[in-house]
Every structure is written in structure tokens, then in C-alpha cells.
Length: 261
Image (tube, rainbow, N blue to C red; front, side):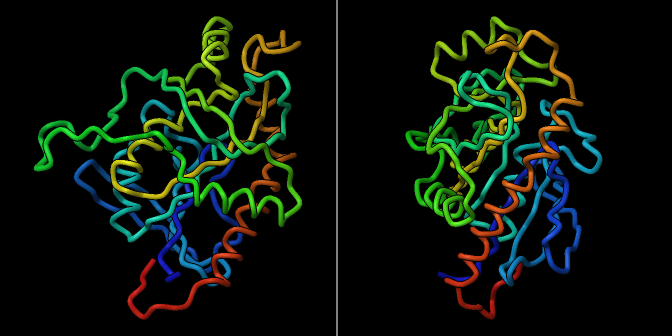
């Protein structure tokens, strides 16, 4: 295993990686626009960190430039990507603070640029297989890191992606539940499928921060205060898992003179 940079993508509540050594912010220009990333090392492993919503949560989910973000990671030499999704629970057995390593998704978005291959590129129209959208090997690394860090996670979960930035209606959540969704979010798609189009090995861990609309006994409106409180109580668990995963990778890799994060 060589020291290729690991891509880490996160969203709400995860705006920097405190453990990142010698962090350097930079802007990467791509054919699809610019992406802001932070490069550095973690346990000596090169890392490229990208926060979807930008500094201060300035970019709403439906306006995230997913194509520029994924293209930038690939251009920087990333092959493996670990993503963090902050979600609402559709499965009533899931509570705030619970973690899932996702294995499938539903796409309820409507107006996003969803492919690199829109017919205008030299490749023409490309139909990408997403039988296993979350890479089995990276999923295994996440599960093993969680076990080593002593953080319980559910192995598997279906992520329902909605357009946002508003929260979902009760009817929308009932529809997603009927389709088999476990959690709801606003940023996981098309990120996961764009990664697949470029051949990146992508997996995601979901942190539940609230019950989705109408789930269980939830009768009160969803508030950012509720989400922020859950993040404050639980984000350390996600960071502990990432820390263990990066540490394990660092011990299994050897420096390569040509590597550059």
C-alpha cells in the first residue's frame, strides 16, 4: 500500500480536522468550477479534506458544486474517499448519536448536475454501474476502525437524499421509509455516484442527529439548535473512527518519493 492521499469529505458540524498536521488551504480549479480543500498529514498520512458547505456553512446543499469537489480530489491524486453524512433517522430505532456505515442510497433530488458525462465530453454518454455504490473495502476499513475505537456502528443503511435546504415533509419521509430508507440527508447524492464515475473508492459513515419529520414520537419542528446539540455530543465519535482508520492506514503504508498531497 503506497501513501496516496486519503480524501475526507464532511458537512454540517465538521468544518475542519483538528488533528490535521501542517494544514494548508488551497483552491483547485477544475473544468466544473473551483473547489476549496485543505491538505496536510494525519499520523503522517497525506490527507485532502473537503468541507461541503464551505467556511461558516455558507453553501446550501442544493448549491454544493459536487462535480468540482470530486474532480478536485481525483486531480490531487486521491483514490480512496471517506465521507461523513449528518442525517435524520427514518428508522425509528435509530436515535441521535447513532452511527451507520452506509451500503445503499435513494435519490430524491431534482435539480443537481449528476454526471461528468453529459454527452459533451470525449467519452460521450456513460452509464455507470452502482450495484455497490459504497466500496466494500473502504466500508470494511470503517467498520474495523469503529470496532478498534470502541464506537458501535450499524453495518449497513440506506441513505435517502433530498434536495434541501428545507427539511422533509412527513409524507416524504413515509415514502422514503416505504422504499427502505434508514436515514435522510441532503448531500450524499450525487457525491457518491460522481465518485463512482471517476473510479474513486468511496464509502460513508452516517451520524444521526435528529428524528426525521413524523418519525417516532417526534412532534416538534426540527431545529438547528437540536442538530447542533447532537453534533456537540457525538461528533467526537466520528473523529475517533476517522483517527483510527487513518492511523491504521499510516502503519500499513510506506513513503513514496513521488507522493504529494
